[in-house]
Each structure stands twice: as C-alpha cells, then as structure tokens.
Image 1: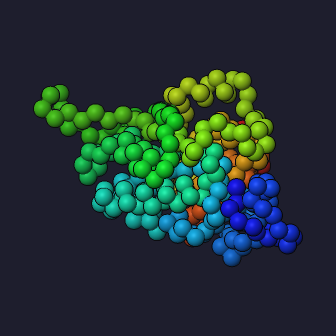
Image 2 (image 1 turned 90 degrees about the vertical axis):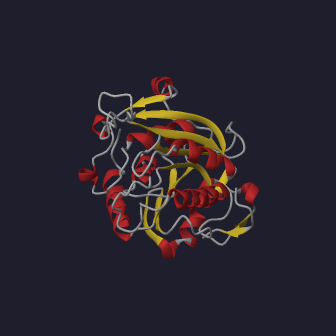
Image 3 (image 1 turned 30 degrees about the vertical axis):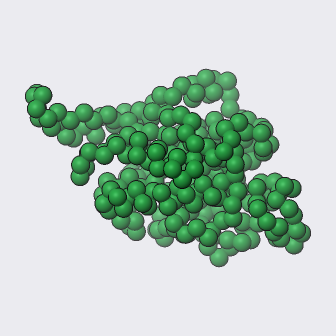
Length: 288
C-alpha cells in the first residue's frame, strides 16, 4: 500500500495500512489531474513515459497487464522501435524496474512478449526479458503460450528443403507470469468473478484465440481484448488496481472497466491517447 501519509481529495489523512483501493484511486485522480487524458468509470488514462520514475509512489498496483514494444521496427508515431538489442534490454530493465517499485508486494505482472525474433538477427527475446525481469526483482511463476493462429508469420524459410540453414518460426507469443514478493493473494476484496469453466480452461497454459486487426483498431500493434480480460479475471480480485504502462489503444483499460477493476493506463503518444480515450468511452459498456 501507500508508503506515506497522504491527503485524500476530501482532505482527510490516512496511513498506508488503512488505505483501500478506492482511496488510492481517488488520490491518483487528484494528484495526476494535469496529466489525465481521460477518467471514465474506474479507468484513468495518462499521457506520459513509463521511464519517468516519478509518476507514482511505491505499492500502488495489484496487477500489471502489458505488451511492451517488441523492437521489430513497427512504425509507431513516437517510439523508435529499431534500436540496438543492447539498448532495448536497457530500456526494458528501466521500465520493469519502475513497475516493480510501483507495485504492491502481492502484485502480479502479465507480460506479453515474443518468444523470439529473427529480424536483424536471431534473439531469444522471451528468455532474455524473463531473466531481466528477475534481475530487477520480479519472481517467476509460469508462462502461458498464446497461439494466435498467425500462420502468415512464416516469412523466412532459410535454406529451402535443405539442412544447411533452415529457419524454425513458431507462430506464438508468450504471456510471462511474474510476481513481486508473495504469490498467494491475501489482500484486497478477495472476490473472484471467474467461472468454473473459465478457471479450468485458462489455467491450461496454452491459450488459443486470434490476434487483433491493426486496421480495425487503428494502432500498429494492438492486442485482442481477450488477452487482458483473461489475465485480469484469473490473476486479480474485483476492485484491484490494474496498470498498463504501454496503454496503446486502451485495451487493458476497457477489460478492467468491464470487470469491475480500477485501472491506470500510461501512454507516451498523443494520437494513441486520443484513440485509447475514444475506445474506452465506446467499449467500456460492452459485455463479453
């Protein structure tokens, strides 16, 4: 929880041990008003850079669901997605460290990243980022394999019909599940809204559903609503605080609003902030 004594918007002081998520959310609404692009229902969208370590106090978030840039030269408006691999790992370490600091001790991190990449040289991205997350303090729990059925990603055959230099490309991504200090959740409302069938299906570590259309969403790298929806219901309680440091088109905020969680999204690009704002306003009432 919050590590100091703060004033709520109603000017009453509270100690960290007595703070609930509604108090934290109300405090953030007041503190971050100047940076807020949207406050809708239980979601706040902020314009800002996750590398700035001054946005939040310690011990704010219960769950982080995010898909960071993959560094595969996607044409974002603001972010440069073709830096060297060493620079990419430094960038990843910085944002993972900030998220660790801002999270509660029982927080979980659902990290959607590629298994590997071959553009510009073969890199074990999934393994490297998992090790890097543990370096900054996150503990490893498990990995979900997301089969998005994108067979068109087989674009490099290497040596055709020859053992000389074949390429092996798996059309899957990872959702790495990490946690801060304690895996078992004893804090929060302790209210779960997951059904028996959902629990049985989603605790199987192979998830199969389609990716999202860039054209339909209007963003170069959206993930489908199903991804944060499953992560939120499986790994958080009702009224927990969910964070996405790369809010993009706002998908995590929509899923959190539709599952009765508080959520904070951080997005560096102004046009994507506007896209996210409109999607949250339009889709937060949708039912799954």
